[in-house]
Length: 577
Image (tube, rainbow, N blue to C red; front, side):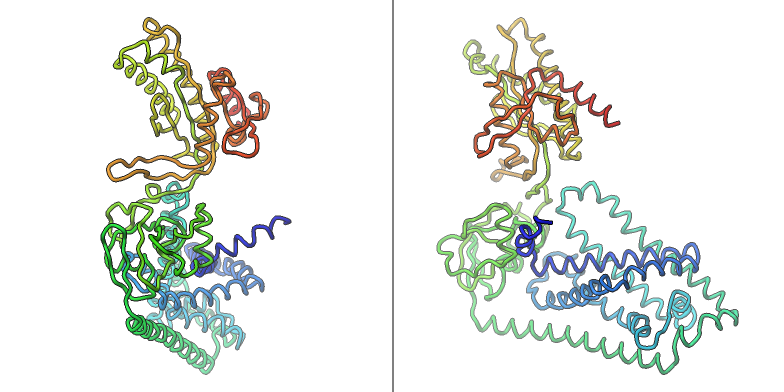
């Protein structure tokens, strides 16, 4: 608890209007999921639905939860109307304006149901539960069933789009996507089937006069006068809601008129392209309006930094970064005031800049690229291998012979990496960087890297035996292994772009590989690898090592013979089992 105040300022800085809307949306989506699962109980019986709704209401009407829920609902609705006013450009992609339209239609569709059930309970103590609601939809007013079905589908699709935009940049999303898709299809399907089965059952039972006497009492459904009062309230609130939407549209028109009168500004992209836009548009919105390719993985939500631009010339007259923009720039380690987020910067004067991320020639209203190719933060294990004595090797041989041996060395290393689930990534002279964890969890990635180091030693032994007639002394090597959060993406220029990883974890692995020379060992493994792999603390000898670029020494494990790592990992797996 003592650390909470330390993190609170960062949490506040990280929360903007979009983040607040997301938080409220997640709360509402949790309610929708709970409600849908309750509807799905209708596939069992109406009694099961009534039993489920008891626990549903017990949780959601618990006073602290109810306060949070209704606050989230009102806030989300208000921010949706604000988004209608604020968004100047609707050509992001079809799915984004669709999400906005669906979201704005929900309050109008749900108003009558909320007033009829919740306000009816508050004002008249009505006890409308599943039998009464299903009777209304399937017997008394079947036309309202279609309105409710449309509402359920719209709420579900709107929520799923929001969840998709939130999770698609997360490292686990690729693995979780099939399961999320299955849930997104099954939950509403089972819910609608449950409503149908429950409604059909109620329609049959309602033909019995005794059932009507027990389930359609005044306390349960109210009087005609009470119903008319609730309908008038719902109608008035719906008209008021449409009035707010109209007010937002009028405000948009007034703002557009004011901006046109305020004059136009020129945005120069640094590649000869210049566009003229009204004051008030963000740089990314200007790119969208004029179909200029501009990288933006998150769609202008300030959840990534791929739309970053560097200002050319004086940047002192620019508007100050918003709280959210400052947080994102700090998060990616940018302190240069000339670097800004294009989705947040709204210049008021002519501006020249260039983009920091290649938009891959896609139009700005298309997805710039996949998150991984533009840039994604995730946990990876980096394994550096370097061939020892390659300079002396080249002095005694023809260039072709040297290249042949180095290629055989790199081939042996790559084979061991691939056999253990890794990916050879960069070849630098007689060295290689391999990455583990692109398609595995951190624990598995660490174990794969350790087994790969043992495999490298075995393959190099075989290579030494094969080339024994041509080598004066066996090929030796050094391995450094470290894991941590890195940035993966496409790095380079034009036709010279490669997929690789950047970050402190990669640099540390390279430093550890260098240290194998001074410590006269075959591999050095960081403490992080051993801990994440769930191996025993005493599995390898520990040593404190000074890492260039780091203020504090780092705990590492020295491996004299890399071949022993296979047995070490296998022993750890048996203990875990």
